Image (cartoon, rainbow, N blue to C red; front, side, top):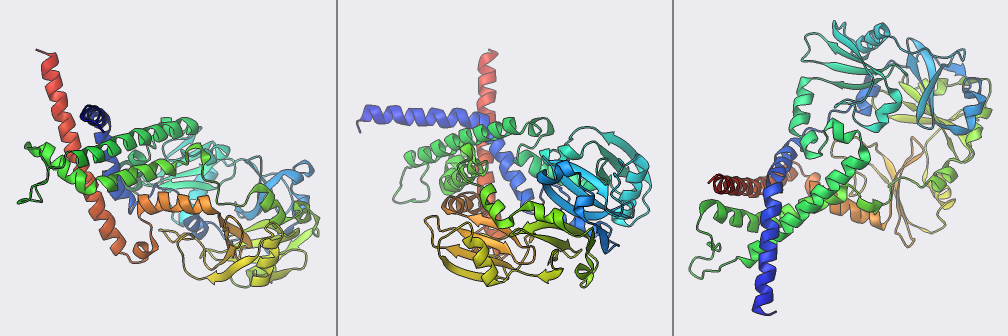
Length: 492
């Protein structure tokens, strides 16, 4: 490469890093600082295990069969069906095209909308406390704390704030009577310090999911440009001194020098974090879903109409032998209707409705079911009682045990199957594996060798994030100094 071309390229890289740094150094600092919070505080969602522990147990063991409750025109379109309690009565709840519907399970009558007064009683029953209500207002649209589109079918909400409990607020769906969100001022504070700035999760932007995705992807893309150009410039500017090998920066000024030092040491980490953050948005949908395809799910479940061909009364008493369920979900397995009881401790139990037999999926049953949609040979099958590299949860929210089934196909497919729920929890092909390592691996350092040896994971992540924060702080200071110089020149 001739000197003139090398000089031109160096200048282009330098200008690229300077100008992207002017705009993005503060954003990077915010990302790193909020990342510390996200290590320990997620966005305040009402988690499934908390919801199950608090809802009323199902006090009845015999109800009308679904075909006597669900309208005939909806039977072919029901996406989910479950049995739970509302106002001390059992109800069926189902969805058609994402819209929830409800009817009483004891007589098939329609469930009326939940009033403000009833919502207050639901809140008291949920926490088993005699709360005094400070405020009860209708929330007709998503706000900062119900910002995901999955909340839309359950609007409007009764937004209930109770007195003397640090702003404890409940969102109760007027459509279904379910508590959809529960949080207080402390939860909100951590969200504003962590998840909201880190994910660019501001309400007015997040409600428009396509626009939010575009904004995050473009910010990440320019961030990659900034960090990569900075890493290259850091290498170009190296000035090796034989007598003082640690003083490799040619810069004399304090902030320039320390931006070079911290960037050289931690620049690669900064690059991997922003690149993995970019891939977390799955740009161009390059990584497929980890769920079964619609065709595979249809084969796994079989004819859905079998659920609506049972006796007039459903006898669910076998599911009460362990303890009283909190809710019962209905589904199909290989064209047979099943009921899956969910208990307050997050455990589950399945039963065939056509024979009233409890069951868990054994190895041979799993092999036979998978063979229906994947004709390849099973390479390995084992029952996991602890998380592995692909089926895991930092917050311990995934059920165990699960069957792990490895296939001898071109995609080296992995299935994770819950034997108690009779469901395929996750499916991994080659691209999913790559996505797992390039996103969770590089972004959260969720490597089993670290994550399973906490606090080692915490120590390593904190040290690396402190380095990234130092790079960002020096960049912000340099940006501020540049702005002051530019302002002085403009006002002369």
